[in-house]
Image (tube, rainbow, N blue to C red):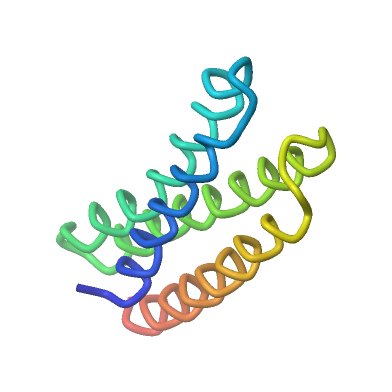
Length: 114
């Protein structure tokens, strides 16, 4: 129900569509890495919110933030290797930035409640 969870769920859909555009030899290597990283974001938010303490929730938000950095790096790799155009990736990198900021605010809010 958190906005950051919904935003990251939308991001999962976008990344899955993008992975389908990768060269076939990368759909199972880099593509799998990207799918795991992007799915980890809303999954960790959901798991953390279901925990019994704000401290645990904060820990899972931290893991989700790490996954954001991972998918950002993988998107940049796709551009560097010429698999995806910069303009297409830039759109997703804007989403990365939004999700990162939302996770930061959520983390700060949780830390004040610990």
